[in-house]
Image 1 (cartoon, helix red, strand yellow):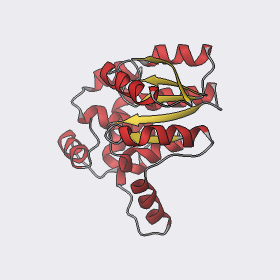
Image 2 (cartoon, rainbow, N blue to C red):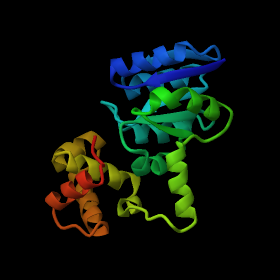
Image 3 (cartoon, rainbow, N blue to C red):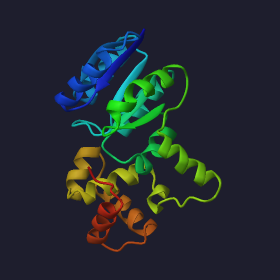
Image 4 (tube, rainbow, N blue to C red):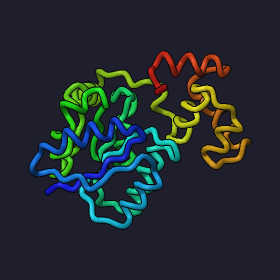
Length: 210
């Protein structure tokens, strides 16, 4: 029996996934959480095969939680669930230790298949993403420039583009305002941008916002 735990801040999403999985005889739902704190507590104190993890949680960025959990429990298989298009985010979370990536849009069709593949030691990406990755390996794909950003820089980019001030980002990420300002400067330099307005336009154009 595959023991699965679901972490998503939307109760309707969690209930929908539980309904999908309840029909599968080889999958057992160990529980669910709406935030990173509850998910962390469960993972550290219970036996679990797969954690289904949303990237957008109210108390912690899902990418940060992914890294923390993999450091504490390297063998835990984590399947990322996200609203974001996979060609924008999947490689970033796979590099951070995730075993797979499923968009919420396609989860109804792919979730069960993804769980079984990850449980058996594989990595799960959709067929469309697999084609994109194959093109990149062959040299025929063009990677978006924001791929050169570090994970923290990418987080700051998203938060600035969503309208948060440097002070708000500082509080959210537990960083000094000067550190956040340094990240902003690096982002602008790497993306060849010159203002927050250009940064916001870039994020919208490349579908980097929720």
